[in-house]
View 1 (cartoon, rainbow, N blue to C red):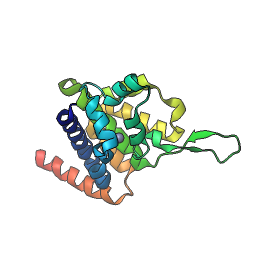
View 2: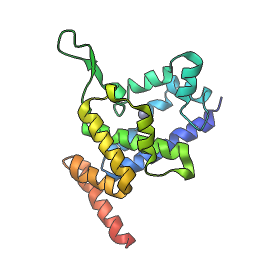
View 3: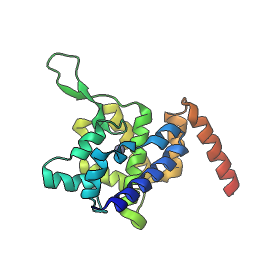
Length: 195
Ligand SMILES: [Zn+2]
């Protein structure tokens, strides 16, 4: 059992996601991101399969054949596109991916940045979240709008960095949300002060 290490990883991950979410005005999501990781169903399994260089879910998958912690997690956390599977209303349409609300697409994006930072440490660069995404190639399972927005953000991050990318999110994706104007105000003030 690596309970302490696992706990530290969760806390460090949540801190990074919180910082990212706060910068674009997603205050509530920033505070509540991944809280289910502290529940016994996820925490005990995570501590048992802790490795430090990748998600314990992968280790559980290899040992058991599926990850019970992941199934618990994605069923409760809307920032995962895997949460958003639903039935088609057309007969015989089967299970299809639904369009994710923009605020969860942005949280998913912040989640991917934080995970890349945690697992790569000092070696992290802005193109890593895109590279990780490209390896997974989940086209079939993400609804079109959701996938296009996520890919656009990942490319923008790789090419132009966080500053430009977060600005784009505030101005073009989340502008109508209550927290965004506050985040923009704080960002402007931060910029003036650092000059
Ligand atoms: Zn999550």
